[in-house]
Amino acid sequence: MKQVMRVFSVVLLVLVGVTFSTGPANLLAMLTPNVLDAKFWLAVVLIYYFIATFVPIDKVIGKIYPVFGICLIVMALGVGGAIILGASQGRYYIPEITLQTFILRLPPSGPPCLSP
Image (cartoon, rainbow, N blue to C red):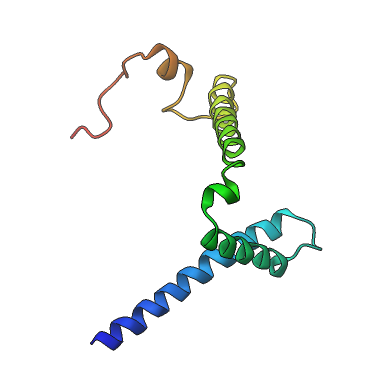
């Protein structure tokens, strides 16, 4: 039974490793010119993984993380603003997010959705 668990664990670890390597490589290959194909990005991802394994993470990308944080905040504000402003101009219809429910916090009219 112990050998079965070892084989099962190794198979799962290989599958997870392949997924976490080829997934980002394929995404980056779709976003970049055809010269930088999935094999190139797979090599970059694997080199990054090896460097991150042997070198402390703050030395590898510690200086870049604030830039990622700023990008995440800007993107979240952009998507939220586009949804709210687009709904107010009639481009999107999202009943849960309108100026009345988001800003004015008016109580809903009519019976609850899940009423019998």
